[in-house]
Image 1 (tube, rainbow, N blue to C red):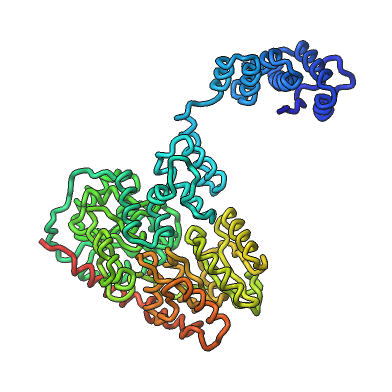
Image 2 (image 1 turned 135 degrees about the horizontal axis):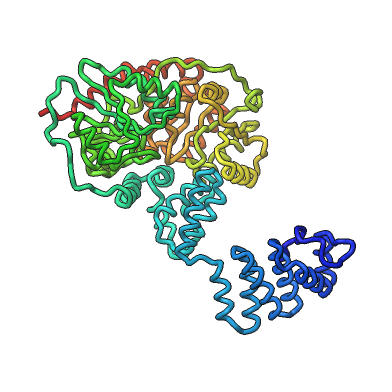
Length: 592
């Protein structure tokens, strides 16, 4: 390795001065002459701060010339002048080894190499920071490097598996780390990744329980009286870090507004950022009391909730980003439920209920017994929605990069929800429908490149795979109406996005899985009367998609304005939803 020595020219009595390129060329063509030039220059400029470049280049030349003793001296001098120059340590080590002195060689190498524990931590931190920056490929490389030093790092495994999901690097849990099996990586994948990895509530619960055991210790104290309080109105607390411009606030705002104040007092315990958004302003205005808890410890927040004598506390995060499950472990309310934020088991012993419905967690299914906490089923669909009509911009296919006459299959979900079997099914669907296109949201650069490569490997025209840029919520909703059929993901369905699609008159084709996360869309479709768009397996899913695109007689019963109107009368009827939601809460509230 030769560092180009532009900073140290002119050299000695060389006239005219050599350029860096000329010196490199001389080193290749006449190494002996280059060695002499470097030595003469160093004799004349021993104190220059950039002399380390010349010393290192001299070491490389001397090693190539078969002079290990001289190479060792030059490399050691370069390293002394620039202690972080690992290349010089490597050169010195190689030269020492060539002279038979392995002890000295090891000392040089260790001089610039942190101990294994330091390297493990450095790789781990680099991976986390790169992941936060959205540089997923680099993050995955650093996280795997940390695991190669120590495979017993569940948090690193969690981040690496989820990064690979977002990159469409399949199978995401196959990490090629000695001492770590794919099955072990799947168990350590973390609460969010498991929803898109396992169509099994028992396995999802195991993953969540393992995460809770690592992160959420039991304080050993329960604050609320088990029998509850005596209040004229039920004190209903909502705990969230998403009272801001977040999908949660889009869904729940009208529910908060419509709570029956003659029977309920509504308090928001908020760890959300002050983003100044209209969504945040609306949510806070809908609360009877807004209690910021962001700066408080889990114990302090729990004691504040206990002091307020909240009868029923609803956690809106579950195990998602920003969650505060440590608060729930103090049991600050007699009854505690989890709702909407995390669509899967949350096996905290202090949680009493998982709010769902009879489609997402069927009573007759054996899997229902695997859910912790126990299912609290609403009458009708579990999902709250805001029925207010949004103001949408005008959009058209040419403006969104879509062909006018093509049948457009669409999916607006994150890449981490797309699995290898599902994408293969999408390729089969588009191949069977002449002229059709698949329209996805450009989520991550790495995932986009991976999907495009698999698309072409399937023999499909690259122009038939279209990636839409991310846009503001109004335009995102408006452009959903430009597609012909929304292809849902599995085992983690679209939730808010599926509801938005139906609201815009876009039919959704889904697969009914075994888990809450794999049955969300089935619940939404049941609510609007599109049960014929719920496929029992992947083959039926492919056949139904192809039939809808090629046979007018197979079209869904509701599309376009008729479907949008049905949404308004069902999922969009928040007055009715609030009545059903409150009835479920009152059925489990405890009164002293």
